Length: 94
Image (cartoon, rainbow, N blue to C red; front, top):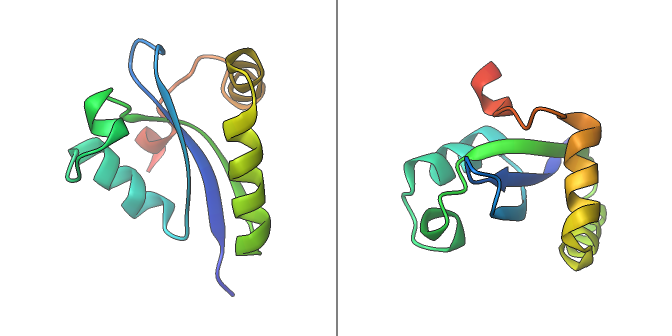
C-alpha cells in the first residue's frame, strides 16, 4: 500500500514556508535541501522540514494540501507549533 505525505518546508529564518504533497518524503526533502530544481523552495531557501502528515489515500492528501494552502499564515504557524514548537528540521532525525 502506498503512503503519501503532506509536508511543510521552512526557511531557516521562518519567513517563508512551502506546502507540498509526495509519495516519498525523504527523497522529496532531499531534493528541496539540495536545491536540485528551480522553484519556490530554492528561491526562498525552504530547506527545513518542519511538519508532515501521513495519508493512505492520495485524494485525501491532495485535499489536505489544498486546504492548508488556503489557510492564513497564523493558522499554518499554529499547525507547525502543534507538532514542532521549536521548528526543528525533522529531517535531521533520519
